[in-house]
Amino acid sequence: MTFASFQIDTRQRLEHHLSGLLQQPVATRLVEAMRYSLLDGGKRLRPTLVRATADSFGALPDSWLHPASALEMMHVYSLIHDDLPAMDDDDLRRGKATNHRAFDEATAILAGDALQSLAYEHLSQAPELSADTRLAMISTLARQAGHEGMVAGQMLDLQAEGQQLGLDDLARIHRLKTGALIESALNLGALCTNTPLSTKVRSALTTFGQALGLAFQITDDILDVTADTATLGKPQGSDAALNKSTYVQLLGLDGARHEARQQTEAALTVLDQLGINHDSPLRALTGYVLSRDH
Image 1: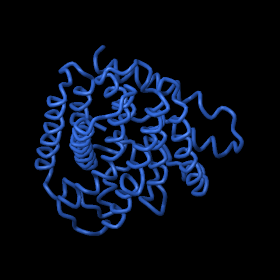
Image 2: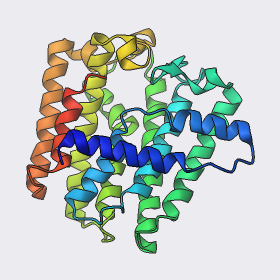
Image 3: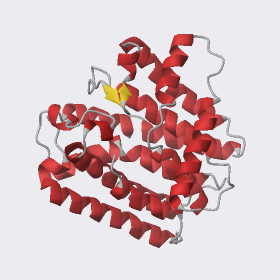
């Protein structure tokens, strides 16, 4: 299977799985808001990363689907909240109105809250995984999404608005805000083997995830300058509008591109150390992060 076919197959299976959820709403408007953001497509990078890692570690073919879906729910909740007026105050996400614009602020907050809860519930019910593995996955996701991971990064990002950051501070923010869920995708995928991760493997996945997360974020910063709103699916130049420090601002466009390549090469080096095959979708996905155009 080519990587393009792998991506398409992963998206189709994920979309089918997600669309089967939330079929019996207690609060109809809440579920409409949850489905509005959860089923609106997107790159589905994190679920693809879960599956690619699971495949690379020899997990059962279908074991990735529940953890990948749970991780995507967590990611979507973060986007809904990130777009709120109290955060980035965005009107457009993935080419359509943000959740709070399509519904209202209170509904958007509740939709995000509910998706976060559903992520853990769904992960706890993964049929192909042992109870110990499900518990390890829940612990991993909670840690990397919470006050020491993604949410911490969001807080630091808000505090940094209007300030001139150095590269180390900027990297720290993005390792948390963006990289933490990418690290979580790697850990969830590796855990699909139903085997505890060794300290060596966990450390390697952390290094890989940090490099890949930075490559992704730097590419985002580049696209925020070089791509248009229609291509991005969100307002072009939104970082500049919020007076945020970016890699392009600090390094220039060519410097940012160089740094993205450096981070990608660092990620590929880790895959070599882990013995991941050269035809692995995990290796192809690493290259995709650098070359994507939206």
